[in-house]
Image (tube, rainbow, N blue to C red; front, side, top):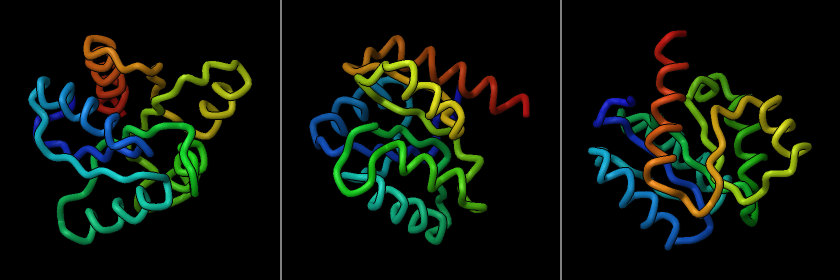
Amino acid sequence: MFPANTHILIVDDSALMHSIVKKHLTAMGFSQFSTALDGKLGFAALEAAKQSGNPVGLILSDWHMPEMSGFQFLQAVRQSEAFKAIPFVLLTANTEPAATSEAIAAGVSAFLVKPVNPEVLKAELTAVWNRVATR
């Protein structure tokens, strides 16, 4: 599992989702969070965290958001030399095979279907960590 001090960026256009995801993550022992309301603000948060000396170690992002979608945000992160290795989990209700294939090709680390279930969240984060830790 990710270390408890991992800085987690939660990107969702719903403040309620920020609260729900933070609650689940806090119950797992995490305590360092940043939030953003869309991918554009999420990318700015990544840059700010890096400059502050407390870089983001995990991104949880909604797929459908205004300004910059989660998929566009994923593409921007994967194209950035500074951020491309950060594990990126998409939270979505979109389970269409074409969309899923597109996100996999773009480098998504995992998908979580909304509403987020705490046990499934923990299992997915453990699986992502196991893949990242063996690189």
